[in-house]
Image 1 (cartoon, helix red, strand yellow):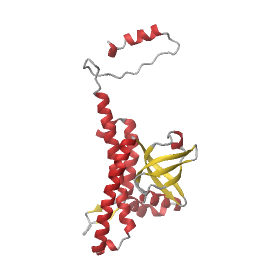
Image 2 (cartoon, rainbow, N blue to C red):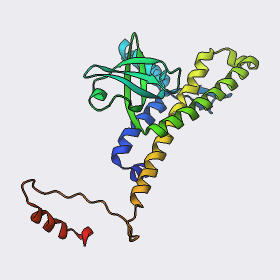
Image 3 (cartoon, rainbow, N blue to C red):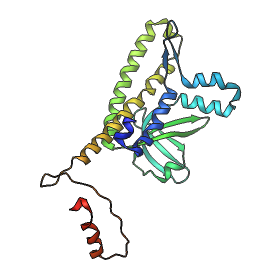
Image 4 (cartoon, one colour):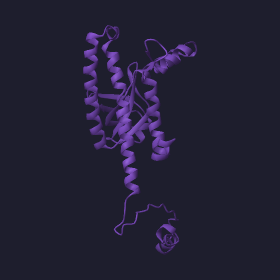
Amino acid sequence: DEVRKIVGETVFEQVYPCILEFFFSNCYMDNDEDPPVPWNVIDEFMKRKASSLTEEEKIYLKAIQQSHLSLYEITKIEPEVGLTLRDLIGDHSSIRVLEKGLTRQAKQGDIVALRVVHEGNEYRLAGGALNMDPRVAKKTAEMTRALHDAAVTMVRGQMKYDPEMLMHTEDEHLQLCRVMWAVEIITAYLEDVYKKIKTKKNIKKADGHRLRFCTLTYPLNEDWHDIADILDATNEFI
């Protein structure tokens, strides 16, 4: 609720799906076990509801679980069909995703935080999408890549000496590193939004008074005298 109040309803509705999808893909430690064991909410859900899920639903849930949030540059738009994306954090490869909704809003060259879900031979988008400021996106991509490389080095070092870790594949551990990209991306997005909100609130005029932003509505067929009367009657302009 505090985040919602600070950034506003619109921004919160954009961020919330990204946070929820992170919760679905992340692993947590069950401290009730000795020793603690990792668990994932999708695994738990599938254990309890396996008999009522279709094969298609199971495949989709596993695809969400194995996905991660990343920063993508939109390099091509096929209206009402899909997009071609270039990964700015991973290997910088391009992929084509099937997605109608975003083709109506996005522009070529936009940098967007997206979760790409791999289903069979196709790529689709999950629900969350954050349109990033290019400068913020570049800085976030560099920082996330550096953190990922450091985490990979640490994981590979541990796998050499930890028999427990050798029971799992390197891909599983690297996926856990990729899952955490969401934390860096969402944090950077919210910090940028917050800075812009603070800047807008603190803009001052030459006389030192705070600049106020107002929205006025009036019929298009009114002449300038009528519009002037409306402005004169507005308290913020008095």
